[in-house]
Each structure stands twice: as C-alpha cells, then as structure tokens.
Length: 243
Ligand code: FPP
Image (tube, rainbow, N blue to C red; front, top):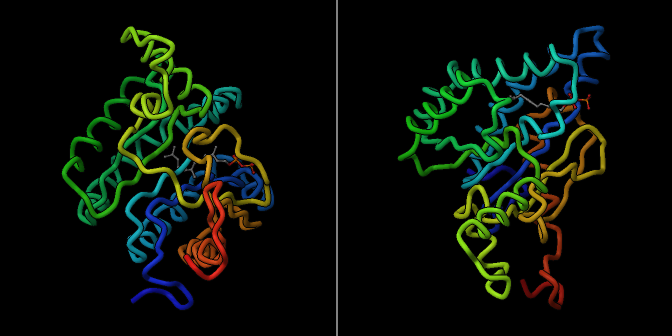
C-alpha cells in the first residue's frame, strides 16, 4: 500500500539524494566524523527500502564527490574502505531485493583497485535486477561528467555541428538513466554541489534540515509528497489542475 497522502499514480521514477550532514551529526555527539558516515549506512538502507515500497525505479545517491579528495587523508581512506565494506556486507541483501547496483563517476587512479573490484563485483552480481536501480555516484562530479562526455564525443570524431543535447546525453556515465524527478538534499544546505548538473535541469529540489544519518523512509515519503504538490512545466505553460 502506498504511504498516506502519496498519489500512487505519480510516484517519481527517479529520486536522487545528496546525503549531507554526516560530519555534523557525529560532531554534535562528540564522535569522529567517520562515525557519521558509518551511521549513514542505516539511512541509506532504509531509504532504499522506502523507495522500493513506493515503487520508485531509480534511486541515485552522492557517496563521494570529485571534491571530497580534499578532505583529511584518514577520512578519504575511511570512505574508500567504507564503500568497499558496505558493498561486501550489503550486496547479497540488495540483490535479494531485486536492486541493480551501478556506479557513476571517474574510475581514476585515486580509487584503490580493490575498491574498484568490489564495485565491479556488485554491478556484475546485480546486473539482471530490474525492480530498482541504485546508482552510487562515487568519485563523481557533474562538471567532470560533462567534460568526459565532450571528450568522448571528440574522441569519436564528432564534428562541432553534430554536438547536440541528444548526442551529449548518449555520452554521459549512464545514458539510459532517466533525469531525476526530484533531488533531495539533507542537512539544511541549499546547494547542488556539482551533483548531476546535466541531468537535474528540470528536477524538483527538496531540502530538509534532517542530517543524513537521521534520514529514514518517512523523510523520503515527505519529500515525495512535496514533489507531488509541485507544478512541473518543463519550461512550458500548464494551467494548474490539468496535469
Ligand atoms: C556528506 O556529509 C557525506 C559524504 C561525503 C559521504 C556520504 C556517504 C555515506 C552516507 C555512506 C555511504 C558511502 C559510501 C562510500 C558508499 P559531510 O561529511 O559533508 O557532513 P558535514 O556537511 O556535516 O560535514
């Protein structure tokens, strides 16, 4: 059954989340920042369950940005290892739930080989699942993605007049991924922070003060309710009530 106040006919196809506030959550408790990331795992898993409950087909989360390398070395090391261990601990469970795991981002030399291996294993294991696609944006930057798409078009020998939005889209990290209908950012920050710059051109943005480690499916449902109250026009004109 669809949660109260949510129209089952207008469930967002793609929800994207900026999982922000882990550090502050930990600092408020006198804990190391990395404990905040560890606590974020439960939030992520509950959000996945909530998205499955809703019937959302695509869930994308920002796990590590191209800017996060600037963090203290031990935090970066922690996040790399955490990605690896999370995948090892949770891949069977995600697989059993029919979740296809994928990654977007740069596979550059800074990502340790063993982390890449675990990523590949999780992708391979869950490749055939179609209930929902969980995309982890890892070593991801929106500008980097656009640059990579342009490089890939040039490498193919595309001439300038053949560079169109449609063609560029085909060179994004996940060309088959629909644009997010709604992007949720936690922790009371009102920024996009280089997340899915191309894809979120027409996404509805929902902000909440909840810190990511406290985020649960009920907060996702609240974001979907807010989304369903928005009037999406995609640059056109539409009288209210005719959608
Ligand atoms: C932002 O909080 C959060 C991150 C940089 C990492 C998010 C990662 C997880 C929730 C766990 C899943 C992770 C992987 C690698 C699969 P912040 O540290 O910027 O918090 P702050 O703004 O309070 O400092």
